Length: 62
Image 1 (cartoon, rainbow, N blue to C red):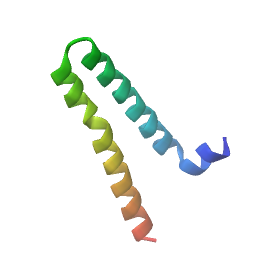
Image 2 (image 1 turned 45 degrees about the horizontal axis):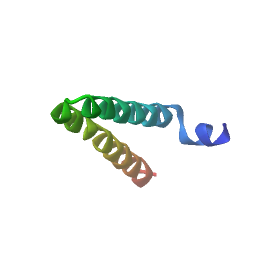
Image 3 (image 1 turned 45 degrees about the vertical axis):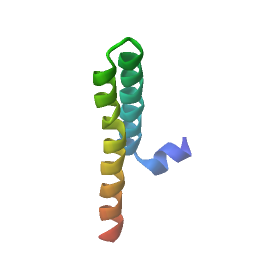
Image 4 (image 1 turned 120 degrees about the vertical axis):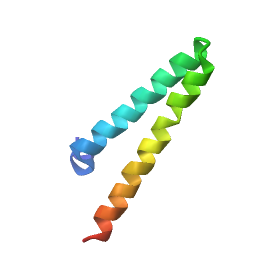
């Protein structure tokens, strides 16, 4: 629980969203809709990249 407090609610929510995106992508890919599965699967690393970028900006302004 201490780890989640340190991480922050918004970051935990974004990480949960990334996990959900990966699960939906795998579901689509394995059920025969490979192109949509790949497209949606690329959202998770993009979202993580935006999170890292925002964190770097936040830490740079301190």
